Image (tube, rainbow, N blue to C red):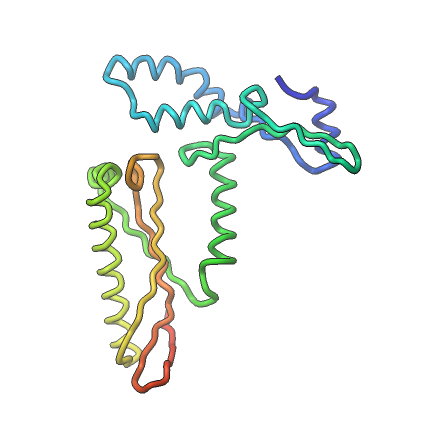
Length: 214
């Protein structure tokens, strides 16, 4: 199902919009061909986690008009356009991952991160511990707390030593990234910390701020 080729080309020429065609990609064709057989064999061995099955099934429906779409019409000029629904998953859909990455970057830059120097720190866990954290919320929280606590302690100690500060405040933005949809942070989880490199000292009643050197 889809628009005729000449209709899609004319629509793209008018609006600059080109409909996502996942069925033309090698990844989609590979998943579509081998997924049923792979799932059948996995069922013989006990089956796959539900979030894995949902990820594949949603990917195979992403961008396909027959799986659901919107018919948008401009009331002024009468131009119409079919827009297929997207899966909005975070596993391996290139289209949805790229859109999510762009939206997240814009949100962080415009509404979250202040205009100060920022350094990124990444806590990468051993493979076995990643899977444990992916399914154990308590363990994931404890590992994250240990990572953030040690990072903050190190930054405060270096700031006091290098800048001769009396009191240091370290503000951190923590983001959990995953490549799956396990109950906790994901089957393969890593924690990223973006400590704002702005440190404060209160030798008197006034508040003085300075920054760590690179």
